[in-house]
Amino acid sequence: MENIFGVFGINWKLLAVQIVNFGILLLVLWYFLYRPVVAMLERRRLLIEKGVQDAKDAAVKLSEVMEEKKIILSGATTEAENIVLRAEERCAAKEREILDEAEKKTERLIRESEMRAKEEQRKIMEASREAIAKLAVLGMEKLLREKVK
Image (spheres, rainbow, N blue to C red):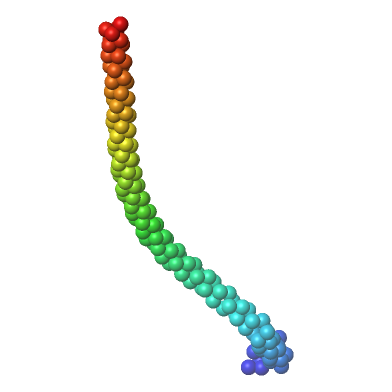
């Protein structure tokens, strides 16, 4: 085997030392460079996987929130419609109540006006009777005076 190395001009001792040096260099590079780079790449891979998973979770959460939003909005719309309907019903009831009250007040005022008018008519009629009676007495008195003269 030495002959083969000699034919090619290779010093086997130097080759063995270079192989040992290369092995040491390989171990040093593996320990100080390859392992940290691989660890860093693994951390980045895990970070990217976590980011992807978080994005998926966020998408799921967003769809849940959007669904919940739809449910809440439909419930709020229904509740708002019910509130408006109740308000319209109360408004109609209040309107009827106000109209009934106004009608009663109008009827009461009409009755009071009629009673005042009748009372005024009675007073006027009584005053007229008194005036007619006085005029009749005065007329008779004048007639009697004329006959007596």
